[in-house]
Length: 404
Image (tube, rainbow, N blue to C red; front, side, top):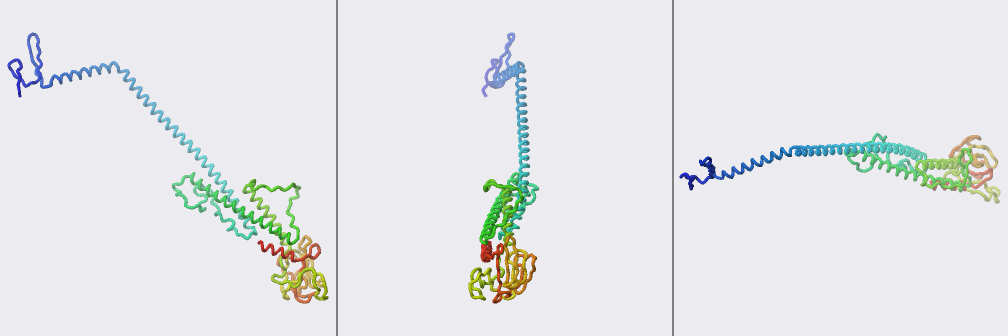
């Protein structure tokens, strides 16, 4: 280490030295290395602190006011956020209330629709059950089982097969309502298709019956009336103007007409009195078997064995049952509307005048009484007492069988 002279003949190690003179006297203060710099820095720090303190004293109110202003702004912003959250919560609650009200209305609508579907199904089943259209109720009403009561959107129509259904635990009420609505739509489509099928078959049945009446040459039955005067030119109502219930009512009315026509055919002799028997003599001109000269034959002769049953060809009332000249043992049945049938040459009579007979009722036994050359059945049809060819009635019956 190099020592420096301090002016008193002494040496030091190079540190900072401060000389102080006072009243002619000198004194020296030796500082460690960089001591002056430390003192300067301390002095600067002291001055800075003083300036800061003075500034704080001078600007204290403004600083406090600024701090308070910032705190107030923060508070207002927080309150605004709370208000916005409350508004959003209220909107959410309102929206949910509206959605719930809408869902309740939707469920009420679905309940009404299901009730309507059940009523429609009941009426369709009634139409199918009383129909003579060669179709079973299973074929006609094959769309769905009867829906369960609508206790809730989750339980309605659970029995209808609609494919793979979603997990009920994760399915919302709205989704369930939509699924029920879709099931109802499917049933509605099937019911409409069923109604159209029944209406089509009924129209075809009516056309067939009208053709049978025309072929038999008898007037169609008069439709029932309520006694009130009505009229006007006929204008068919467009299908688009009819809803499902109106079309059901229309079909019911048309079925009533068909029932009247069918009932009328029950009293029309369109069935054979001797099933499977061949004709031995036709209606009209022929050679008389006794005189060998041309004569008029008023009926049909069926080649039937002695003692076989003779059956009524339509409903009616027995007006004659006994011996009748060349007819031998003869039964005459009045079917109404001036239409009668006669069964002659029988060996036995099994009915009496005034008896009511049904289709297929046995009225006697085949024989050869009266003006006859051997066992057979003489069968006549008469309109207002005039003999007409029974074949026109029998051919009408064949037409009915052929068209079902």
